[in-house]
Image (cartoon, rainbow, N blue to C red; front, top):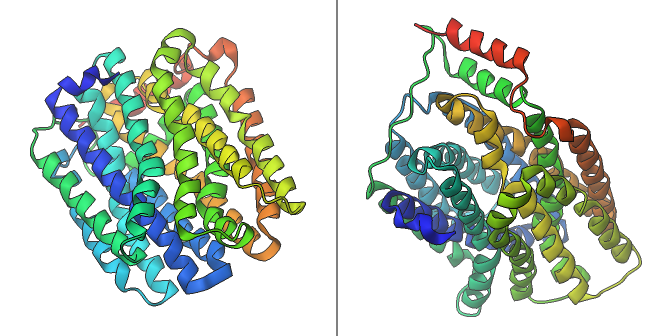
Length: 424
């Protein structure tokens, strides 16, 4: 899997991603503690709102950036996004009001909404071979797991020496290092997609959305996004309240619980390249979609009964991490195999980035406000129901006989006509 790091361009891009995510992980821990500091037992509601603001930025900005990605220099766009994110991270330690958190989170995540889909669309051009690209996807998943696993561990160690607000300095340093690494390599130019004069970013964004609706497997992916969000929202939003209030444990144990989620995710990401070569995407992603619902249901029942088993919570979080990794890691393969033209990949990745975060936009407030108003047990039960409905929808949409197909002929022809109609 690590053989793709011999490619210098990809090696620098992967390092940029990993370092930036390490800093983002520190910010996640710090933001949880900041919310608890500002709102106490109402921290779940504050976090749920802050993360919903993040999703609004992702949903609104990513498709537009994807539509413009073939007009802008990729390196300039990536570096500018890193610099904006670093500047916002430096401002976060100085907030004193909840509304200030919301404003800064929107600015930071707007820059991330420009960075992430552009980065994702660059990798297939850097590593055109399918085998290399599959390995790169697993490495990319490992980078996200580093955010979930190593960042909390690092944060726990740092919190013994410094106050939590200083963790935001690590976030800013991560974004600065990411910008330097991106500058150090020459990136391939995106393949231009022909469009009619006057066709704007919104029309291009709508085209990306239609791409994801034109193949059965990609329609199923939209349902899988909701299953992932149901599991992830419970972990991200409610861990701090569970650890601090329900279990009455220390600040450092917030990091440990988040790290358990990352450990499960990383274990699956390491194993997936060989598994996907043998069984394919559908055989991995659909079974994983049915895991979060029963786990969340058991967690909810335990919380309602007053059970306070710390090892059980860590185990549940690890299982949820493993399931979400199995659903998320093959996503790039799925999109690359189903989208008919290489020039359409930036729009498709941006649309997936945006639509996947619509799911988080629904589940983050649900997890936060239910936990604050009705308790964490009610939040876990509601998210279990959402996850089960999403898994059933994905299974119905992604039938076995269609798993190997890309676009159905009629839809392929319609998209071909759309591209022809946009030619200058």
